[in-house]
Structures are given as C-alpha cells and as structure tokens.
Image (cartoon, rainbow, N blue to C red; front, side, top):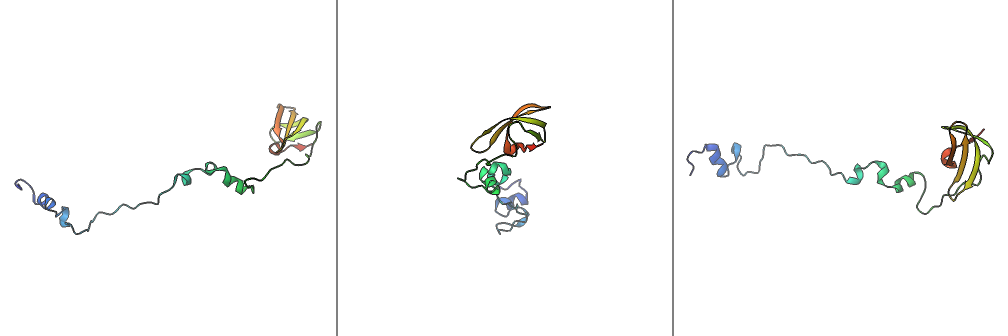
Length: 124
C-alpha cells in the first residue's frame, strides 16, 4: 500500500506530519492575530449614532421645552443685514412655539422666509 509513496508522504499518513513534528502540539507556523471586534455602531459617523448624543452636547435633555425668545432686535419695517443675502426690509414676523418666522425682502436676493435663530439677522 505504501508502494510509490515518498517517505514524507508515509510520515504524513502515519501521523508524523510534515517536517517531523507529529502530534506534539507544536506548530512552527505563526498564528494569526485577531483584532478586537468593532461593533457596527462604533463604525458609524457621529451624526448617525443618534440625536441623543448631540442633544447632550448642546445641553438639551429629553423632555425639555425650547421656547422662542421674548423679543427680537428688529421689528416689521426695520432694515436688517444677512450674512449671505445682504441688506433687506422686514415684511412680517410670525411667532411660533419654538422660534420666529421672519419674512424679509432683500435688495439683491428677493423675498426670503427664515427662522430668526438660524438667520442671525442684524439691525442696520
């Protein structure tokens, strides 16, 4: 049955293994190192981890109510300046539960409706 087989083949069949190490438990090949498993949540960008983390950074907590300020620095008819659209005239201010909705007719950009907290309008 062992006719035509090399001595290395015979040793492998008989349990000697390659290189003469046999079943001693010693394997000269280096073991692969395993990296710590990274969860899917850790791989996501910060923005997709959830709005709760962003709220905590902003000092907001679940259940807190954000209200619009009592008054603005400008009123209807005042001239204001916007960082992108330039100067314009305030046409309307509508108070909403969280912010003021301001309608402005800009000299260059035309009429725009925006929220006061985001617009950062300055009275001229």
